Length: 161
Image (cartoon, rainbow, N blue to C red; front, side, top):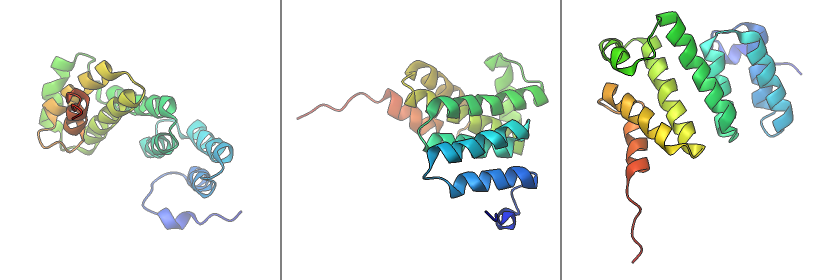
């Protein structure tokens, strides 16, 4: 199969990985085939967050929430390592607030909020709420959706009339 990787010239990944991702997209309806290509791309990617985000989206939209969570956490861990972030939220919070417009910090917050969404999908509501509260502390404009998700998770059930 001939794959035109120039269609996504903005996507900065090696051509061999780009081809695998495109093959996965082309085989979207064939789950086992598409997942084979995604997993091959993941095996070759290392710490390329663009590929990880593509894989996260694939697994999320295929309802494979455990894998989507694993990928989101990997993105978080990569950025945590590169930035030498602490695991203590109270120490990390002022750093994130001060740098929240930087691309890598936005990716960190996006991945963290995404992990909260996936945890909610997996029924781990308390963990999801905690993450939403933390992201909302940084994100006063709700750009990452944590406020909306928190509202959904904490809204009392509607009464039936």
